Length: 237
Image (tube, rainbow, N blue to C red; front, top):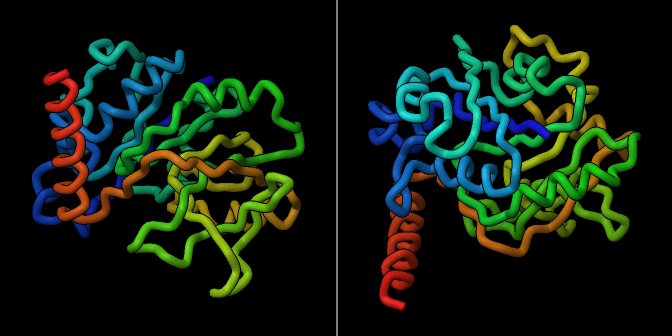
């Protein structure tokens, strides 16, 4: 399996930090946010990874290089302008060799194990187009995004009173989901997912572990403090 890390966003809510540093390179716990993904992917055995970028993308390539320092092989997809999630994935489709692939947002921190993707795909029904990792709703997004049914299928949230979970920005996809997406035009992911949900082609899982959407400087600071304290505690043991 190959993987893609989405790193093309401007990070407007993170300004002024992102005026000079691309969001995935912001430090948390002594390393760039994106490095946590690279290390987890390497440990899982997923080592062929593509990173898309737009804003300050040359700094991402300069910082990560060919990925050898992280035990992975990196390739890059430069976008100008940024193509949004579905457009960026559509541009990258040849990299995935017509096989299911894993996509992770570069601006989230999560302890979900990418090795789950390898085990899951081995028994994934062929009529499914997407598998979403969902988490409990954070305080800043209490309404959630999608409903995870008892049979494992994911459906749109019906109304404000319906129980829902939040999309973690981690998903497994089949290339067919993006077959009609123009690789040269910006396109969001949500409409494709909702369309596939109506065809019962999206399933998912609830991740009960740690997840942080690093969407503001305050959340970044809290994550950095928590990871640093954890590292300090491990040294004292």
